[in-house]
Amino acid sequence: MNVPVSPVSYVSVFHYGLQSMANAGAEPVKQLLKLIDPLATDALGGALAAALLDNVDAIGAAGFQLYLSGDLGAGKTAIVRALLRGMGVSGAVKSPTFALLEPYTVSSLDFYHFDFYRLKGAAEFDSAGFRDWFGPGRICAVEWPERAGARLAKADISVELTVAGEGRLAALHTSSELGERCLNHAVANLQMLDDGLSLPAPAHSSSR
Ligand SMILES: Nc1ncnc2c1ncn2[C@@H]1O[C@H](COP(=O)(O)OP(=O)(O)OP(=O)(O)O)[C@@H](O)[C@H]1O
Ligand SMILES: [Mg+2]
Image (cartoon, rainbow, N blue to C red; front, top):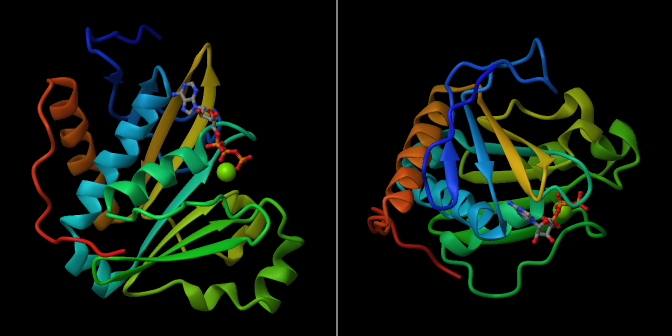
């Protein structure tokens, strides 16, 4: 397939409707982004942050699940860190590799950052009571979601990261109307960044 390369500074937004190679048969890929360097990864996290902040009320009612897949070092934590920064978290953002969970508060929402790489199967997911952390008023960003198997609530947005040359490819999927809305919003934000514009102030401010 010929993928057009747009003449942008650091983020290229490609096709709608591609099937994921790594996830064939699951949700179709809504956006495929070439993230040419770590700044582009930060831009994606920031664009998602602005989109989520503009949907705080809907997330308060429904909750929001963002799942991030990809090999060790693919950039999952990098996206979550930029997302948290964009939502106003100014303190340390540690990878939850050992703790499995790092909690934050953003705007009026709880934000739980999980990393299930070290989860010892679905039994540990159950015994730790992780299912109870998901739900209305919570944003759950989950690295290595496949380790929790079918126990997880469905993703609103899922990101599959692969190393591509010196950069990364991010395939983005949605499985809810809220996820679709937030992704469209985030991609519009990325296009503004590519055009050299700054993102508009979110409708809600954040805390911590
Ligand atoms: N677009 C990019 N191009 C090149 N390097 C990148 C890009 N985005 C992030 N990186 C680099 O890749 C690394 C990603 O590390 P990160 O901890 O985010 O990976 P991870 O997917 O969370 O891994 P793990 O599974 O171990 O938690 C960092 O060193 C970061 O600087
Ligand atoms: Mg990580």
